[in-house]
Image (cartoon, rainbow, N blue to C red):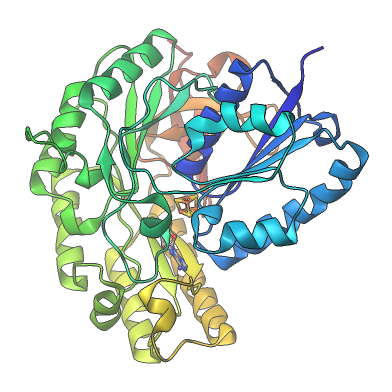
Amino acid sequence: MKHKYQVVTFGCQMNEHDSEVLAGTMETLGYEHSEDLEKCDAIIINTCCVRESAENRILGYVGNLKRLKRIKPGLVIAIGGCMVQQPGMAEKIRKRASHVDIIFGTHHMHRLPQLITEAINGGEVQINIEENEGEIPENLPIKRQGSMKAQVTIMYGCNNFCTYCIVPYVRGRERSRAPEAIQKEIAALGREGFKEIMLLGQNVNSYGLDFEVPFDFADLLKSIDGKGGIERIRYMTSHPRDFTSKLIDTIAGSKTVCEHFHLPIQAGSNKILKLMNRGYSRETYLSLIEEIRKKFSLCSITTDIIVGFPGETDQDFTDTLKLMKEAQFDAAYTFLYSSRSGTPAAKMPEQIPLNVKKERLQMLMEIQNEISLSINQKLIGQTVEILVEGESKTSDQIMSGRTRTNKIVNFPGDKNTVGKLIHVDIKNAKTWHLEGKMINSPQ
Ligand code: 5AD
Ligand code: SF4
């Protein structure tokens, strides 16, 4: 019988994709995935540290595995990714969680086979967190989560150093994958029947800035647009500071790059934006989204916002609320500022008390929910094209898909529609999704 493994993921899409690589690696070692942790011979935990809440959840999760290790001493427990890459964290885990066998940082994913073999042969807990920004490992095995949507990493790391963010410290400097490697991966995905590609990077619009021969993100999009049966191309995350007109024009002229712009603004006050080191003002941000809306008759714009950054006064927060009303985002992902040790913001004076942060978050969410609902209501009566992804969360009679603008649309239908592009009449609108009726049978 094959040995069993499970990869447990915390964090963003980048991490979810890294976990696909970790799962692929385990399978080439002869392991088989199991949903049942009790049956596993190896558990790999891929961690996040962007906010303290994630870190606390992970430490709790790892603590709970002690019981399993006691019953099954041969169990290999590996913990990797962003959280363990922070200074002092590996030691902390070693001391607090002696049942962990392997600690591997973001630069050591590809060494997992060797680390697992060594752990099986027994011995000391292994810590591998040195930074290594040399060559990008290519041709790693990937066990994809779905068969319709695939994620493709185009660059690693981040050079932005927003003052609140831990990512540049744990993911290292920006490194772009060679265009040929990306194009080859996408062509293969097209042959396998994938319909949608999500290009991943901490800041995709910096893609290619590290190349000697100029080839930027817009050039990359142009080179993959409309090829190999891929119907939709998305990307994340992009930085409003370097979202160029060239990029906007390229997207407008493309066939498959979707009209969804995720542009994290983070705050609406110029004072706070400066303290955050974001490199744009509320005015330049607003003119960017105006430019986008002029070019696209139909598009969606979403954002990320942090409330309670150090020094954020009531006036600064009011500026953020005003910006939300002006910008009319389709959706906003809102976060309480979380102090991350080692970042400049952690040392700034005037840290905001938790209750104030929570009150602000609540106000922000209420305003945004109203805006999202009213934007969605405008779609009632329209016909939209969706790519059907699967059953909805609530019922197997209701299917769920997304528009090119990334809106979730639920409709009565059956499984035959999965993976197909269909047209739906929008009948009803909610804050986070739309409801509709299919008007043609799948091609
Ligand atoms: N505290 C709260 N939110 C954060 N983000 C990044 N760092 C922090 C932090 N220290 C948010 C940003 C980013 C999103 C992925 O997470 O809004 O865009
Ligand atoms: Fe978490 Fe950021 Fe790492 Fe993603 S990149 S896993 S959000 S810390």
